[in-house]
Image (cartoon, rainbow, N blue to C red; front, side, top):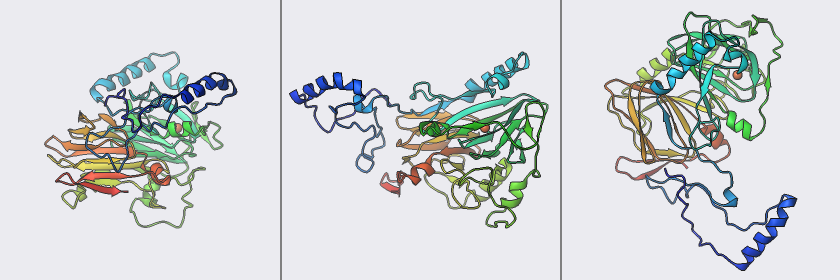
Length: 405
Ligand SMILES: [Fe+2]
C-alpha cells in the first residue's frame, strides 16, 4: 500500500478569500491554543459499505485535520532473520556486568510496524515483543494496567507465576497475565527459553492509564523477588479446563482485574488436540478450523481489549477473502503457507510473525504438506464494545457477504 498516495477527495478544494482570511487569523490565534477550521475532515478509511473492492485500502488523512496521523502497515517478521538477535542478546547477558534483564527490565526485542514511525507497536492497540531468558534469569513480581500474554516458542522450560499459580511453559502454551494481576517470569531450566509477549500497551498509553507496581505485598523468594506460589501447578486448568462446568469454590477474581479471565494457562498440547478433534468437521471458509479462547466465567474474550484465537489450515487449504475493522497479529506455530493482504503476499513458516491491520482484505493458504497452525490476537473485543466491529467476506463466487455488520 502506498501510504503517500493522496486520498481521493469527494469535494474539490475551494480556495476562497474566506479561507485566506481564516488562515490569516490562525497565525495569531495559535497563541491562544485554538485553531480556526480551514479544512474539511479527511477520513483515512474509505466508506465500509460502499467501497469494498479487494484492493480497497485507506490512505493517510491529509492536512491539519489529519496532522500526526499514523497508519499501521501489513508486515511480516521472518523468524530466521530476527531470531539470531535473541541469541546475541543472550550472549551479551551471559557476559554482562549488569545483564539487560536488570538495566532494561527484560531481555527482548520489540517489533515495530514500519507505518507507525518507530513507535513500539505492531498495530493500533497492540505491542509485541520476543523475549529470551537465560537459565536463572528472573523478572521480578509486579503488576500493571496493560493486559499481557506469553505465547511460548521454546520446546520447554521457563515459567510465569500469575496470582500465585506457577505456569510451567511448553511450546504452544498461551499464558495470560490479565491487567492487575501480580506476575513474575523466570527460567530455572538448563537452556534459554523464548516466548512472544503481546500487550494492549499502546491502547492504555493512548488513554494515559498505564501504571506499574512492584511492591508485591506477599511472600517472595530470591534477590529478584519471584512470588512464592500459593496455588498448585495446573490450578486454573483443574478448575476450568473441562469447559462448561464452573466450580463454586473460587471467586474467579484474579488480582484487581476487571472482566479478565481466571483461566490463565492454556497448554499447547491441549490446543493442538482440540484442533485435531475438529479437523475434517464443518469449517469456516474464511478461517479454516478456528478456536476462540474465552473467559470460562463469562464466555467473553480473555481480555476486554484482546481476543485470542488458534486456527488450523489443512494441507492445500485456502481461505476465502475476509476483512475486519479490527487488526490481527499472527504467529505461526506449525507448517508453512502464505497470506495475501491488500496487494501484498507474505510467505510464512514456523515462528514467523505477521500483522494484518484493520480494513484490509486477506486470505491464508497452507502451501505445505502438513497441517498449518496459526495463533492470532486481535483488538476485536474493543471494537465490539465501542460499536465499531464489522467484518465482510467473499463467497466462493466473489459475492460480498456481511459477516458482522
Ligand atoms: Fe508484566
